Image (tube, rainbow, N blue to C red):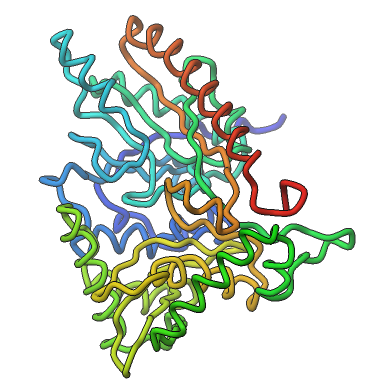
Length: 388
């Protein structure tokens, strides 16, 4: 007689320090640095997540005995800051009806609108149980809703119809495969050659302005980053948040933590003039993708933002064989610089049946509008023939 497998039991964890890094990292392929135990636990241990900012770690895990079978990085939220899937209208509608939208439960990577696995599990059966456990904990803890932001497309079919689907558009660069499966572009000039004359000329002019201003760009990988370089990058990050009146979450200690624990993933671009850093961009790399995260500058130089954040990243991908570059959320200006529209996804389980029904129609209309918008954008591709 075949022994029946021991059922999975759910545990909610107030921090990733309660899970051994090897256990957590065994649930994913390591291709996305934002899901690494070192990244997520570093946010907690280095002062980047605070309850008074609306982020309380509340990770969901499924166990068979002492073996971790599935997990989801998650947080209790009492606001919607740092999520990039905007639900302010939902919260307002709840308030108008005398209901509490917060706290809610969020499965996501804090402050990072990057697509990646969210249902970390050893098999699809465990993933399905993880989704069921999300809805169950929402009801048990009397939360308004559960949200899974920027999950991968191949995880979409695992969610039931009671999970509302939302979509948005980002702009991603990709190096398409040729007939032999190899990357089409080997150099930045190859990339430019695929563009129409107008866009190719514009990019060359932007890069030339930066060069004429006496700016030199330097790429530093994590293991080589000095304390001064990490401090300079963090200073640029702080400056950007101050310029926009927002609160910076990432600490200098967190950057040091990344350089120690994820040195192979950390990539920093510094722009220098007269031997002094005047701008920087912080990226992470994993698998076949470079992820642009933060930028800042102490001087205004025409074209410097595009050079530091976009062109240096594309150049880096071409040199190192990475096939994709995700430079962050929003920004139609990225289209003219070779970043094409890409639909990104999120799923939402709303406990209140009346609101769930009303929001279902709202989400369908939103998704249809977003996909029409993406098709319109695709018609303005900068590449010859309209695509690459």
